[in-house]
Image (tube, rainbow over all chains, first blue to last red; front, side):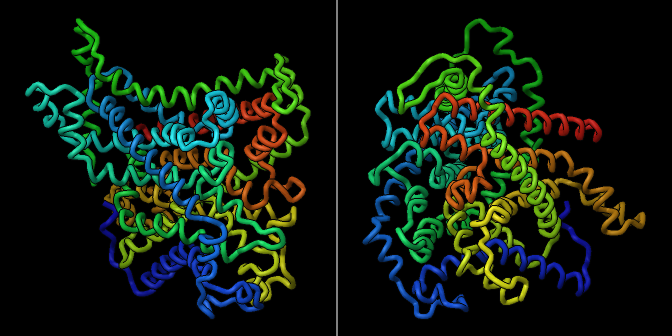
Length: 281
Length: 315
C-alpha cells in the first residue's frame, strides 16, 4: 500500500504541512468569509479595510431573510423535494442494483454502463421537452415534477454506488435465503437492505445533496414561492439598487452549513462511495 | 477497504448463467426490479432527448403558437448564428481550461494527500466543502469575493500593490470568463483530487520502493512509475469532468447571466434563454441537440484515449 511512507526529514515535513494548510485554506477559506460576512453590518462590509471578525456582531441578516424574504418557505420546499427524492432514489435504486448485482442477467455490465451514461446527458437538452410535457400534464410549479426529475437524475449514481456495495456482500447469504424459499424481493428486503444500512445512509446523503443543490430544473419548472427551492430563492435575492451581500451570505450559511456538517461527519464513507467507480475499472 | 468480491463475481457471471441457458421459463424478477428505473430514466432522460430532436425539426414558438415541421431549417440557421458560435467557443474554452487546471491541481493535491501526515483526515474533510456547497451559493460567494467595489480579492490585491485600482472582475468582458473558470476550479478541484487520490492508492507501493532502490529520485519515480499507472484513471476522471464542465449553467447564469456583452454566454445559458425567454422551443431544441451531439463526440474522443491508454498498459 502507498500508505507506508518512508521517513521524512524536517524540511519535508514542513513542506507537507504548508501544502496541507494551503489546501484547507483554499477549500474552507471562502466559506469562512461567507460566514463572517453574514454577521457583519452592511456598513462594515463596504469599509475600506474588511475584517474577518464581525464587529459589531449582528443577526440582522438572518432576521431579514426569514422575516422579510420568507426564506423558510424555500427551505421547506427544498426539504420536501429532497427528502422525497432521496427516499424514492434509494428504493428504486436498491431494487435495480440488486437485480444487476445478484440475479443472473446477461449483459448486466453493459446495462450498468448504459444507466451511467444517461447521467451524462446535458440537462439543458431535456428541460425543454420536459417543460412541455409537464405543462400538458398540469405538473408545472408542483413538488411532484421536481421529484420525478430529480429521481431520474439521482438514480444512476445511487445504482452505481449500491451496486458496488452489494457486490461486497457474500452471495452465500441470500443464497441461503433462497434455499429457504425466499424470492428475490424478500431476500432484498430481509437480507440485503439490513446489511447495507450504512451504505444506504451515505448514498441517500449523495442523492439528498444533489436534489438540494439542483438549480436549472427548479428555475424552469417552478414559478412561485409555494414550490420554489432554495437555490432559486438565493438566485433571486437581489434588491433594486444594491446587492444585499449580507443577506445572501446569511442564506448561504443557512443552507450550506447543515450539508457541510453532514458531509464532515460522513466524509470517509462519502469519499469511498464516490470514488469506488474510478478505482475499480 | 478492499473489494475483492467484485472481481470474483465478475468472473462468476462470465460463465454462461444456467438459469437462462435452460430457460424453461422467463425469470421476471430482474425485469420487475429494474422496471421503476427503466420507466424513470426512459421518461425523464431518453424520451426528452428524442422529443428534443423531433422539436428541433419544427419552428415551435410558444409566444406565436407556431408549430410547423420545417426540416433542417433550424440547423441551417444554427450554422450561421454568431450567438451560437460565440457560446460554442466560450463553452469549449471554459471546458478545456477548467478541465486541464482541475486535473493538474487535483493531481498535485492527491500526490500530497497520498502521503501519511497528521491531520490528513481533516484536510480530506475540508476538501468536501466546495463539493457539497450548492453551485448557486458558490456563484454568489464568488460574486461577493470578486465584487468590483468591496470584494475581498480586490482589497487583497490592492493591499499587496498588485493592482492600482479595483478590477471589475466579472463585470468586464476581459476578466469575466476567467473569474467563472476560477470559481469552477475552486468548486471541483478538491473532488478531482479525491478521485485521483483513490487511484494513487491502488498503485502498489513496492513499485515505488523498487524505483527508489534503483536510484530514481522523487520526480523520476513520479514521471516513470506513478504517472503512467495513473493515466487511465486520470483520463476517466478528466472525461467526467469535461462532460460536466461542458454543460455548465448555474455558475454562469447566477454570476453574470451570460454578460457582460455576451462574453460569458455558454451553450447552456444560450439554450435556456432561447427556450424560456424567447420561447422558441424549436430553435432552442436544435441548440440543445447540437450540444448533445458535441457531448457524445467528447465522450467518444476520451473513450478512444482511454482504451488506448489501457491497451498500452496491457490491462
